[in-house]
Amino acid sequence: MTTTEVFVALRPLRKALLHHAETDAERWLAAARRDATEIVEAAEREAAELSDLARARGAAEAEEVLAAEQAAARRTVRSAELAARMAAYDRLRTEVVAALRALSGGPDYPLLRERLVAEARRVLGDDAEIVDAPGGGVYGRTASGRVDCSLDAFAARAVAALGPELDGLWSS
Image (cartoon, rainbow, N blue to C red; front, side):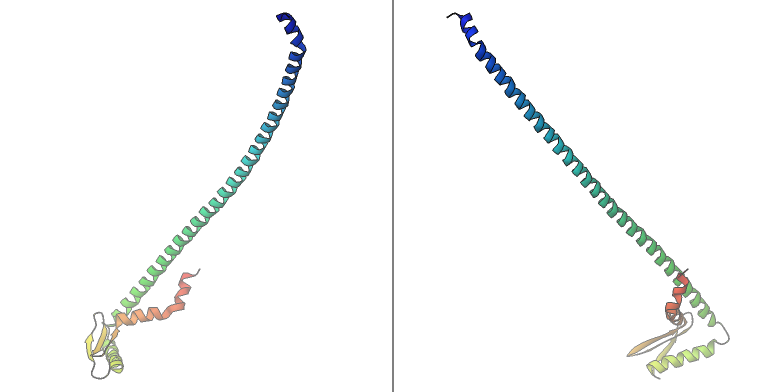
């Protein structure tokens, strides 16, 4: 048998093998396309899920940041409000102290001083040592105690005694 005869004899086998290879290749190619489509679809679903998750996380983080900024703003406003209240309270106290101190230069001060001395002795006893306080009024002291009957102390107590009445100054 010659090479040509062998070649001719193998032609149907070659054709069958080639057909079988083409069929296998088409089947593998179709399977690869299906797999690729499934992979792409799964990747798209995962990307959409990740995008939704990222959006939700971003929204949650934005809400947290907003809540923190709002809380900080409320603290700033509250701090400013408290500072303004303290300034108003200090000014009121200063004005009351000034008004009471003005009494020490008035004609009725000797009688007021006598009453303050009497109050100090009532609290501490008749043996209390009495000294004049700067700005008016007196201090009393014994070995066992002290009492402040100064005009400054009375001013501070008068303003503190206003308590809830001061709340009207802060409300609008």
